[in-house]
Length: 105
Image: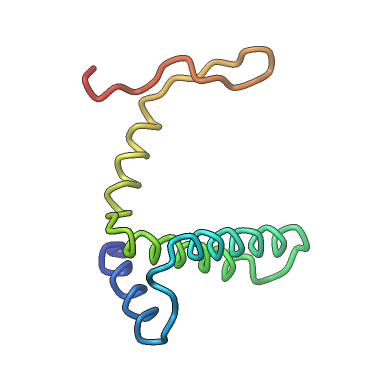
């Protein structure tokens, strides 16, 4: 199992060591968006490097999380749990959330 907390730190340190951006948050979001677009294009064109492109997306997300001081592993775990507690119903052909998770319930 991968320790995302450690990986976050490793990715950030690699950015620092290689002289990549670690201060311009707007730029990091734009670069992350670009990586998502590259992954989509690889999938759309049935290229063999879709996995590598998705890895780039994850790397950018983890790096951005470290820059922002966000424990992405913890946030993912909380969100997965929250999503598991939501209820959905098909309404007019659209899967619609009918019950929101509330931590106080």
